[in-house]
Every structure is written in C-alpha cells, then in structure tokens.
Image (cartoon, rainbow, N blue to C red; front, side, top):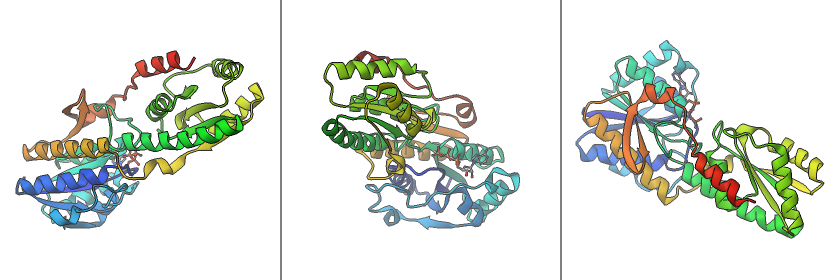
Length: 319
Ligand code: ATP
C-alpha cells in the first residue's frame, strides 16, 4: 500500500491529534503518502482531502481536539453516501483508510471495508465504551479533567458543608464516573452498569454526617439520568443542602495527558502496520498493555465491559 488516508469522526477526544501525527509520520517513514480527510465522513464525501507531510502535523501533539475536524453525517449511513466516499478515495488514489473515532465511526469503517475498501479503526472517545480495548484515546485526559474539577468543587463543598451531585459524561458507560469516583474519593458513584439502591446512597450520606463529615460528593454518570433530578431527590430525602454540577463539554477538551499521547501514538503505529500488511476491517486496541487487533464487525457486536472489581473496591472504601 502506497497511499493512505486518515480521518477523525464522531465526538472529538484529546489525543486524536497525537494519533494523526503518529499515523502521518510513521506512514511517511515507511515510504507511504498520507492524505488527511477533513470533517470526518462528511468531508470524505465532499472530497475535502489534502496531502499531509511531516511538517503539517508539527506542533499538534499537545493540543486537544482534532486538526482534521470532526463531523457527524447521516448521509454517510446510506449506500449512496458510502459510494460517494469510495469514489473520492479512488479519485485521490488512496488505497487504505484509518478512522479515528467511536463505535459509530467504526460502523462506517466496517461498511467501507465490506465494499472492498480496507479500513482500520482506532478507538478515540472519552467514553471508554468500545469493546476490544481496555482504554480509548481521550479517556485518561477526560478523567483527569473531572478529577481536577471535583477537587475544586470539594473545596467549596467543605466550606459550605454541602452535598454535591456531579454529573459526568460517558454516554451509556460508567467508566468515567467510576474511575473519577475512586480517584476523587466520592461517597457514591452511580453508573448505568450497576443499580445502586437510593436508600444506600442516603444511608451513606447520613452516616458520614453523623461522623462529622463536612461535605459529600456523589458522582453520577450521564447514562443514569439527570444530575439535577437526582440532587432534588437527595435533598428531599436528607434535608442536606445539595448542589448539582453538570461538568459538560469541558470534559472533551484540553491538553492530552501523557498516557493519552502515548496510547494514541502506539495505536496509530499499529494501525499503520496493519495497512502495510494489506489488512483491512480491523480495529486496534490495547489489552493488558499489549497492542491487539480484532475484526471490526466482531468487536462492534461485543459490549465493552466495565471492570466491576473497581466498583466493589469503591463500595469497600466509601463506608
Ligand atoms: P462518539 O462515541 O465519540 O460519539 P462515534 O464515532 O460513536 O463517536 P457517531 O456519531 O455514532 O460517533 O458516528 C460518527 C459518524 O460515523 C456518523 O455521523 C456517521 O457518518 C458514521 N456512522 C455511524 N453509524 C454508521 C453506520 N451504521 N453506517 C455507516 N456510517 C455510520
């Protein structure tokens, strides 16, 4: 394979730039030409395609977001949309494509591969909700953003002796909430994967108050429901002054952490290796700190499993 393309799609995640950089540099090292496709699959259909050289990915490793921009496209979910994309790839003489994104983006990559165009998926989403990899690019940075925010909220929670419900992202996955709960020393974590009886949360708050605790932090994953609704229920049940913070899109931005930059570079390197071998229809991942790759369609059929031993530990620590 002599000419490949790279695009980012779906929700952006810190570390995507590090992945783009590694794809471009490693491919050039192996005498391939690399084309950047702007605005995800939408830009692919529109032919927003430009050759990238070593210098064009300079000074981006430390930046959040994605220099190739991202987009969502309904049209690309159709046969005609995918055919338009393939026409553009052919027009530019591109023989293989690397797609950095979440499971929706992987669906698109699987469709192109099924139409005979080899694609490799790199998991990039803060949600950590992709099967076949222990971590996705952006998860660690988002986690650290949450940790910093919750540390700050804790200061004011203590000063005013308040209970805080903090809603974090993750779509249907509880990874960000659970990891943040452990790292921030929260009293309770509410995640879609585990039904926590409301009475347990209330009992824990009351026990803490009796012990003289000055504040309480509850971290709620967005997949469970609204933080505001939960805050109202908590205040009604405990009469503790309760405040709610929805962290929102702050979790998607910012400088990627070292862990995300290294993960992005490693996954990108592996993706280029696979295209060099002429493989397509694969997703790359990291499992037990080893680089792995799986059939993209098989991986899409699996659900990502949250490490429930962390939940158990959380329950044993937040007594
Ligand atoms: P995140 O998890 O961060 O939201 P994502 O990749 O899952 O990222 P989606 O919006 O689900 O984000 O998907 C991104 C794009 O991938 C869609 O806008 C669409 O163009 C394409 N896509 C999604 N599903 C399919 C599908 N079934 N067939 C073809 N293309 C698809």
